[in-house]
Each structure stands twice: as C-alpha cells, then as structure tokens.
Image (cartoon, rainbow, N blue to C red; front, side, top):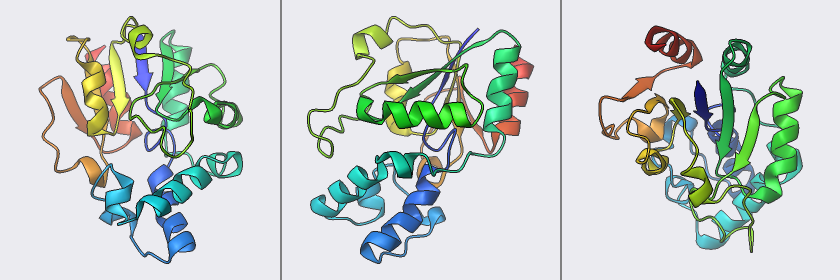
Length: 201
C-alpha cells in the first residue's frame, strides 16, 4: 500500500506558526481560526512585498525546524511504515527547503518516510528560480492508495488516481470547501485518519 502525506498543516502546525509570525513581522493579529483561505496572502491581507518577506523568512532553516508536530502524526505514519506501507511525504516546499525539511522529519522520528518537493502551487515568486525534486510528469507516474492532504488547491493532483481515497485534514481554510466526491473524507485529527485507513484496509 502506498500513502501520500502532505507536510505543512498535516505533519506540522505551519499555519498556527504563521499566525504568530505575521503578528511579529507586520503587527497583524489574525488568529489561526480566522485563516479562512489557503492563499495566505489573502488570509493575512498582505501586500505583495509583505507576502514575499513572510514566505522567504518562513522557509529559512531555523523557522522550518521550529514547527510543532501535528499531534498523532508521527505515531500514525510510523505505524503505517511498521505495517509495511510505503509512505511518501509530498510537499509544495521548494527544493531549497529540502535539507531542513528532511532534518525535521528525521528529528521527529520519520527518517523512514520518503520526501519529495513537488511544484504544487507555482511559488517561484518568493524564492527566485526555485528547483523541485519531483516534476509533475514523474509525480503522475506514481501510484497512491491513500492520501492525507489539507489544501483544496492540491486536490487536482489526485485526478489521475480514480481509486485513491483522500483523507482531508480539517483546517479552517477547507471547511467551506465542497469535497470533490465520496472518495474524499474529512478528518478532524490523526486518530480519525488512522481509524479510517484501518477500517478501509
């Protein structure tokens, strides 16, 4: 069994960190629960310049390594790997963030999970000439049975896998999104994700 797991806001609490980050950088008080859009520039009402500053700082190694684990993520993923499942972490972070992202996984006990940087969102604007370790045409040759994802903008990357079951990690920016079909299910936490995959297995 092959499992796709998104990094930010699935494995770690990126948006919660950003909420404090924006207050520190720009004096904007936007609580986590008020982050209504996956587009953070829109959620935080940032200018193009502010957004670029925020994203560059957010992708520095020291900040990437500071993100808190989403409760239950590590134990669940390691349980899958212990059961013989193949887990790939597919992140939209650019390859310049690979080393720190790999270190975060290793330090949190996820050293057996593969890590790929896929250009999901066309984010070359804040880190110029970004490279990615996985191109779309190669990604589309990969097969997954299950996926854990929080971003409605990423759902299009599952169109080539009609049998894929997608567990949507419940976040403020996806609560008003209509899920694409019955192979998508909303999960409030990693305990629910673990139980759903076990039930379907």
